Structures are given as structure tokens and as C-alpha cells.
Length: 196
Image (cartoon, rainbow, N blue to C red; front, side, top):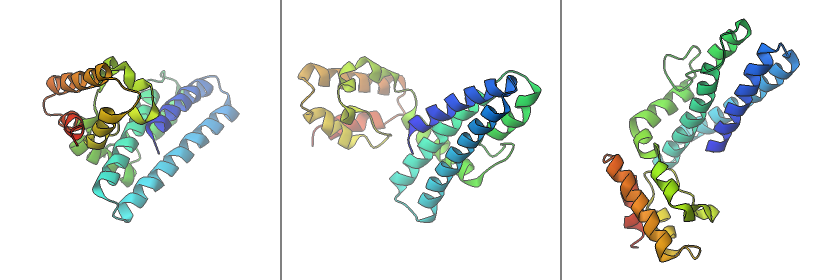
């Protein structure tokens, strides 16, 4: 399960909305089945993490990804045009991570609550990191789910694809991130991890 799964949910939801408006029933049914299958898959992954008492960081990362993915789906379904064919689909796909969802699923509500109360602040708007273009040069430079950025900071400090100038850009971006949201502390763990 990853954040890209949420992007695919959003793409499918956009296509589903259009197919339903065009009365392309076969296409709409295939898209809805694909969305439902992905939701079921992610629900199973998260429920298994809860049931097996997975380590807290694993469970919280899963909650963050699941809440993100549900949010992607909900935002698209909520933006569909007002059309009679879309009303039942909209109700089926919006606000899954919230207790007031039209059809609440306990795992989704739990993931949403964990994300909102513990993880959202540490994984919100890493826009400052866009300035550090060198982070795009290697897959292992992609920032992980916060607040556990210590090992990533060590990677930044030692990665052969980065020069001193690149590392300085990353640290500057992390400090800008912290200054824009002082309660967000994970961005300070990366520079601390670089000193290992």
C-alpha cells in the first residue's frame, strides 16, 4: 500500500464520474469494481496491522497512507457534478476516514482518527522540500513518512549522488519547513540523523 494507490483511486473516480454521466454503464461498473477492490485491499492491510499488533510506527505509517488515499478518492467524488447517476456513487466514496461517513467502515474511521490526531501534522505540506531538486535524483532520497526522518537524514548526509551544496539545500528546506510549522518536529529529526 502506498500513496500512489490514492492517486489511482482519484484517477478512477474521475473516470467513473464521467462514465456515469455519459451512461456508459459497463465502463462505470468496471471502474467501481476496481475502486471497491482497492478499498477492500487497503482495508485488509490496515486491519491486519491492527489485529497483529504491528509495531506502532508501522501501524501509524499505514494509517497515514490509508487516510491519504481515502482523502484522494473523497476529494474527486465530492467534486463530481450534480447528476442523478452520481448521487449513490458519491455517497459510496466520500468521507471514508470520518465517523460521519455515509457508510462508515471501522478500519477506515480508525485510520482517519489516528492520522488526524497523531500523524497529519508531521506529513502535511512538505512543499519546502521541492526547492531541494537534488532529492529527485535517486529513489532512496525520497522523503519517508514523518516523523521518523532520522535514517533518511543519515542517507542525505552520506548519499554519493549529493554534493555539499545539495545537502545544504535539503537542510535549508527542512528548516524552512519547521519555521513555517514550528509544531512539526520530524523535519528536525533529519538533520539530527545526519550526525550519526
